[in-house]
Image (cartoon, rainbow, N blue to C red; front, side, top):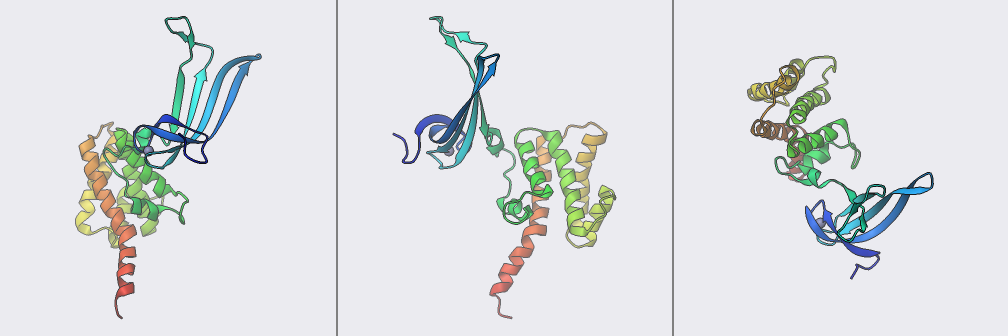
Length: 232
Ligand SMILES: [Zn+2]
């Protein structure tokens, strides 16, 4: 039985539950591709809502009608390729769970992504998808971008100079400078010495970066919230 206001219910892999669930079909559309008036392919677009977690998601199912397989009765079977948005892989937080409050604080206004918010998300995805090289390069860029953003650094300057500015501005404790120099070195190694950093090393680096971002972007908000309730 389908939910009220929906077209039907189908079994589909929900990217949020990361398993097959009952999903309500909210809307759907089918397009057909022809070559010289022959039907060669069919794409089915479906907007779904998971009946388990209530999250909406979208699938695009493409069926190539030119290369069938045959079952034992000789009936043509056309295999289907399904893309899911968001992809289940991007929702698997195996190695790094993006901090929701940090992500929100990096946005422009309420919704608009920025270079920093996109970089933060993409480093998380890279870590969770085993893309160690991209994660290491992203971390180096993120530390540098935060330095330029917060410490009014000259974008032309180098990584070391930008990090020094972060220390001078008091946003990075001097006692942690070496730690962040070492994280930058992981990225330098990928760029200049073709090293492949192990996941364990990257997870430790990202924990330190989360801590830095928390201090720079969230601590001032906490301070303001506490002061609001203090008697002057
Ligand atoms: Zn779900």
